[in-house]
Image (cartoon, rainbow, N blue to C red; front, side, top):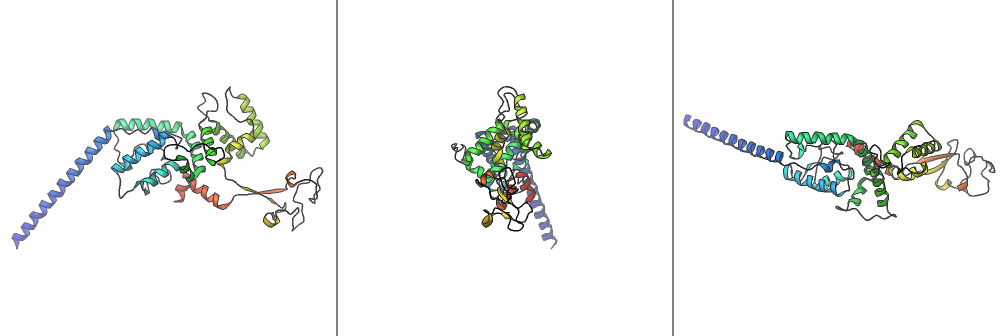
Length: 331
């Protein structure tokens, strides 16, 4: 009996030595991969590209996917480094590519640790420089992110592989491309602080924050335009600025309302001239008009007393999930 026990112990020791040897071989192989990765310096300049439909960005995404699936692929999936998934959720190759185009890659993810990269000291130095460049371009990136969030999944219609679709002024593609061009266009030759679109967006923020009227904002814009050097690209008026960025906002429907909030002049009541509850006129009383609504002329020349701006629910929910920042909080 003691003989068999000793033989069993001997076999266990042999098995343990084989396991240790296997682990050592795996460690050596991983070290070899690490050293090879250190010598191989990935081109990450595409991560700074603000136009996610450009050839540079799309090629960078494809090169990244090639690298990631060679090093970390598990059952056909890898951690998705988009701003929505943040390397938490695993996705297929096509899904990761789509997410990187729609949402963009996580800022600061310059060492692809979740995708098989082992960085050397030299690479870390280059990555630090890349982060500093990202900080400098953060404002421009926010403008482009806003445009891509507004486009949502329809952005894949614009990518079309490596080339964009042909510009057609009658299609939404043209509006999207125009926004990208305005975001990239300098406010004036040599200006690095603002683009044509970024200044208009910030001016709109000031208008909303301080409750400025359209007339006051128009005067401020004209003053800024006169102060800018030759070659400036600012629109002639506030009305022109609103037309330029209208595609960034949600579309809404204007519905006339009773001044006393009794009813809406909507659907089967859309043509009513006065409130069916309190009898108050739908229109403001101006010179040449009567308050009972019995005025000559067409309705388009009348001024409603109160207007409700209705944002349909479906587009609102779609826009919430299109935002990479909000979508990450909802998942």
